[in-house]
Image (tube, rainbow, N blue to C red; front, top):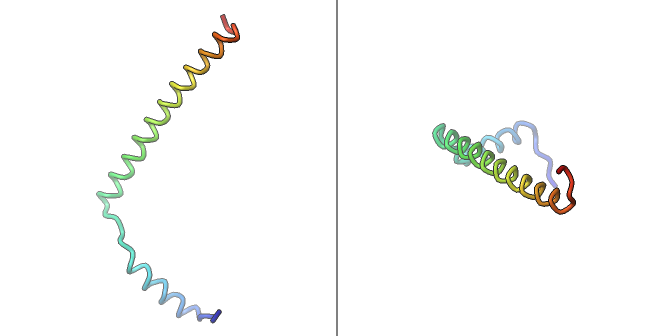
Length: 65
């Protein structure tokens, strides 16, 4: 493997970053909001599933009543 100089490495990094399609500010904002919505939906879903399973286990074992 050939070694490259630090200057050559920096030049190659700049070339590669120029090829990247960066998201717009609006796209980043929409994606961020969607992530927060999905995290909230998943958290509520797992809370409900946990509560139902907990209720079932308590009823089955006769605990807490």
